[in-house]
Image (cartoon, rainbow, N blue to C red):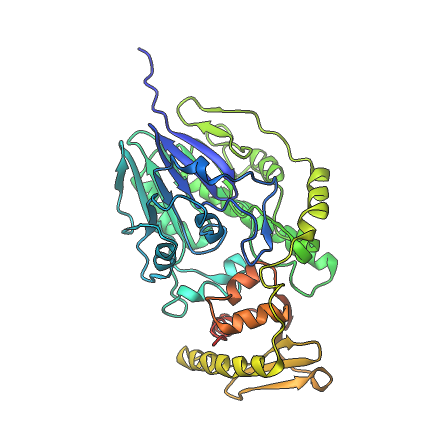
Length: 454
């Protein structure tokens, strides 16, 4: 008997952007296809030749969560607004409202509700449980959608199936946060054909922290291993026939491009080398694949559309130096704010910050120090003692502090409010430089500070 072809196919574009196709039905996942998210600092390598009309035949767009490398407004503004967008039915309507604002129809899908899309292709979107910023080194977390402190659900993973084949997309969900949900998926879908799994960090740690160079490189190695170990855990729990490391793949452009070598982002080929030699993965049962942009993997025939071509690291560095370093950020052409304008924004921002700090019951001896202009510092307390603006030469030695340095023009945008910029995205974009004493993480401090805007 001739085997019936089932047609399920996966096409890799870049980072977390993939197309799942079955019998002519196409679902585009997390389209980030243009450079310049996170206020201009994130770019692609290899560079993409994005033509919006190439995606006019897409039937659905699935967006996993709010981060701009998944929900890329710079990409979506260029695409066909007639394509419906699928998201998890989150308690917070932040993601839904922002997608609708771009002109798209949004379809919210309840947690763990297998939903028929078209021609027997189904999708099941599951919330990835509570966010813990410390797990992914994104210290501001996702407070912009956190209705209750320390009770955030902002990321999702999804399952697509055609009743015979199954693809699981874990997006940015760290395994310790999402293990329970992943177990639910495994119980419901016994045989998983393809797992899309993250392998790298998208945080500002360690490249944006004041540390010795050897300390940064050791921290980089440690974080990379953390993400590789999480991927191993996903493979061993979900037991897919095939798995593909993806997501979190980017390079820094503009003046922050000098930080590229310090990021906790391994080359895809290095991740492949690690996984295919891992003693923690049964290599006979779980096969790792990697794809170049626009290459496909046919689940039915188990074949790639083309063999993988290695990245030339010399060409990559040349592209960074000759092209990406010259980019300017979204805020760099803004007018320089006057001191009294910033002073007014700080007053309004502190009132919001203090209200939130009291609301969550957070108090600490740690002070927050933010550079404003070249000669002034903003001192923010977390114990009810208010704030003050001082000259740099007036700074005393604090026992506990977090110092944040950033471009004054970006600071003004943040102080104006999330419609202009937000602490979270500024951090992920490597726009904030940290110095901490001691090296501890106080979630309530960063959560409160995320409300420091007017």
